[in-house]
Amino acid sequence: MTNFTLHPRLAADTIFVKDLALCRVLAMNDARYSWAVLVPRRAGATEIFDLSATDRALLIGEAARAAEGLKRIARADKINVAALGNLVPQLHVHVVARRIGDAAWPGPVWGQGSAVPYRPDVLDGLIMALAAAL
Amino acid sequence: MTNFTLHPRLAADTIFVKDLALCRVLAMNDARYSWAVLVPRRAGATEIFDLSATDRALLIGEAARAAEGLKRIARADKINVAALGNLVPQLHVHVVARRIGDAAWPGPVWGQGSAVPYRPDVLDGLIMALAAAL
Image 1 (cartoon, rainbow over the protein chains, first blue to last red):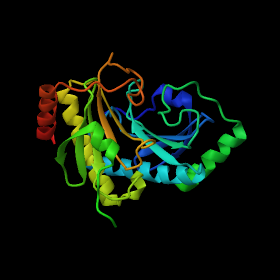
Image 2: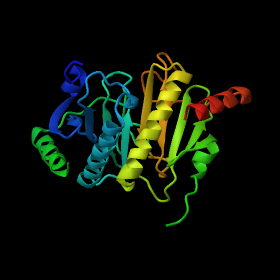
Image 3: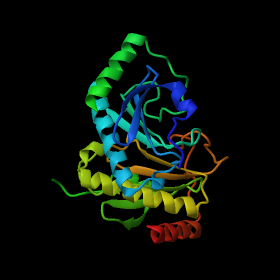
């Protein structure tokens, strides 16, 4: 078992928020959506069935906390939670706050347009609010 | 608490496969992908944080079983697991077998083109294989 290291694509697209019991929580640097990414710190995992039952329960619990926090922080109408991994094989879970009429509504956010980087002060605010909610 | 009833849009798009401890498992009638939908039988739930910790652990366990089964049945390269709900608010989890080069690869499947109904015999085979894997 090698040590956990974050996939370089995830590292490039996100900012560190907090380490929970299982997951590293990241914030996507995309001002179009309030968007967290949770990465289980388990080297080699690509599918949810690669995790133990204990880790799976941790994962969905941490995703639920991130979802509930983002719903409140972003006054979201709906939260999208997804483990896709078609481009980045390292297991990671998107938790995306959606609002009716947002840039991709009602479609999914992935592969739609290009990320709009945050103003640094706005990003700092999101990270602090998200870390506090976790 | 009202009784669980399946949202009419999910009922229209899918075929019943099996009831597990928490979820009703459905097969999407779309021959482009091997695609299951898991619906927790909890009236009124729209987000994963609406479920108790016990139900959340059941949900991810059942999703993992469906994912592992579909990976084998469809010889998938990747499984996409997602709770979106932008169009159908009733909490439901998509478990989609993806193959490199499929109709939406590497993008997400939602909102891409139109479903291609199965030939009945092929659909029966999928349902039997999926039910056996759960």
